[in-house]
Image (tube, rainbow, N blue to C red; front, side, top):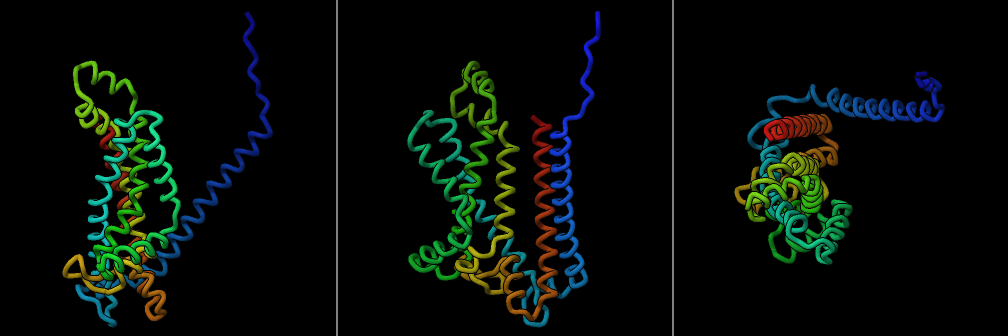
Length: 281
């Protein structure tokens, strides 16, 4: 019996495509290293203890109040947006009938909202929360504006995570006599946890780096607010303010380094949690 010959010729098109892949990878890596390296070189020498003073003044240009405001506004925005986004996705995937017109409208609306520039959210927040509701420039106006901004992202990622759960999981649960509610909370949601968590982490990254929507809603006051109805700036707004004033460029670079560390830490944490949750299943 003759052994079939294995084709050894190399397809020229495959070589060209592989070259494009390597070129794109190298370009991406080079751009990433250039941006990160530039920020670190310009910012690290200016990370002084005075930048972390409890109160801000024109001498220390402290970023500590902005750091606290960033954590506060991120936690509160997630507190509003995550339950709404996750349970809306649970309804559209697990409860609504396939082909439901309401579900189609909700999905089309969320996809449209996810593509709107953040400054439009900022203008909406200014007109509705700041002016119409009379909240003025406040942390609360910023929280609700950011919650509306990240809601479509959480909905879409949660929907995709739920749809990736095999139907055999649900059928097995129903076969053992469990109801739909128990199946969703005990079987489907735990299986979709890594995908949901990835969406939440992406939302955190968008909140931490957001500037335009917050300038029009939470304002630019450089202090830790005493209540949610007072104004306060986040780290990204703090960096924008320092850079636009033109007097503290070095401190703006130092703030960028802190932002970079926070975003990197969030990504590392999400990677760790996703791996741990996947291993525990």
